[in-house]
Image (cartoon, rainbow, N blue to C red; front, side, top):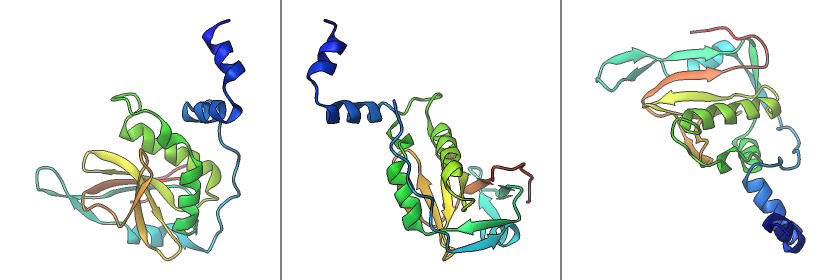
Length: 175
């Protein structure tokens, strides 16, 4: 009997399921979509984002904003986003430099959120040489989200340089 057959025979189902989930072998059960509390236009959204940032060289630069093709986005609560983050398993992946590092975590989390988020405001941002996620809730509170740990912090970092937000439709650059 191979070790895996032995383990499968004698390990209890909960242990097997937890190990499989930890390894990303199957997704957790689906969860209901977020509750929608309001909307925001792409123009209003762009106005809420920072205009400039100070780079590593202490020079001031314009913040880049790549907003999706939609003219309007839905707004949900930070509690709904937290519910999705608790369900999502991407943060369980092992960090590997140049393979599964900050940009991979941020893009994977953003992409997975797009499939669930009902066109709510959740994107990716490059900040200080690091990539993470960002969100805007229905109270128009800005949030930054570390996709490797799901830690959520109110507000944007001062060195947020490039915001990405898209829908499932064609993208265009707004500002």
